[in-house]
Image 1: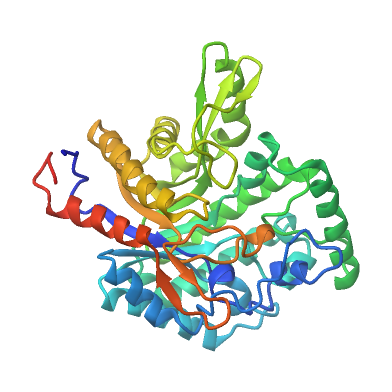
Image 2: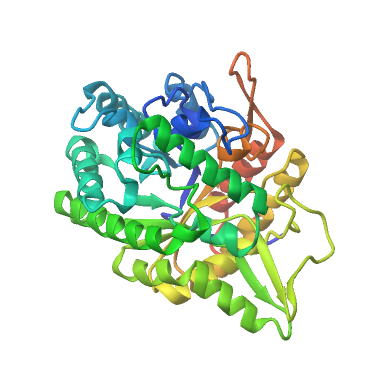
Length: 418
């Protein structure tokens, strides 16, 4: 078997997120919503994977796979649990994590907001408040001041277009949208505020308002990060399905791209890279979305390893900047599917890079099964399973499959491999 080798300097990593992995993120908006009645969240996050305490052994897991990059988020709700009150302990913790990455040969890829925000922020206008960009910039500045000199890439916001993607594809039933609205209204009452909002549970009628707000926040964060360190690559990560058209479906495909991706891809032209997060291919026919024959993933779409390369190609075509794959994976309880999917997807990505699309690195989502937002612990995307009682991590066959891919690319002569 031959394959195109990814370039020297290509980053091989895994992606994680604070709220989903760390546990007990009690000062956050998401924690508050999980405990609101009614709640859209299937279950509360609780201790998650106890990653806040187990971070050292988790970094060992990543290093043990032969990886050289680790993406994680700095939880704003931990750093500033009350407005104007900064936790030295939280900053110390994340600084130790950055240094722990470096000690293991892992490039720290830091996300400054992975959906969650402080509860006080959500209750005080959230991202649409007039001073929200300044508040977020202050958070970015304090993080950069502490350890910005040691990180490799900065991601300002995680998937600010997620809700557009979900709603464009009708992924959530109408009753879920109603429950979301009731949850946010109940949260506002419980918080004693005029409204309550969080980044990944945005009502359909506020999408444009939040897109504008996220854009202001991204620009303010980018400026704050660059003010501290002008040479640090800064970008935003967006959710990008591979949109493919059958004959007659081109207009529908293009309308979807315009509604969901193009704003952020144009915005990324002023960034140093764009983060692409891909999980599926969507096929458009003349009368709507089409489901081809084949095995389905847990999202209900056909398993298509080539979707990542297609998403990366489109993102670069529009943005014109290099692409960092900040997330890619497959939701499935059958790890044999994951173990086959990851190598095939990376093979197609390597071919895309070989054809000239600049790709900086690949981060698999995720290191271990964790809290998947409104779906709770039911959705499985990890390379390791986690015992929900003991929190022991156990590698799945897909962990070895990924490690083998990394090894084969590093060991292959240019253009060929085993």
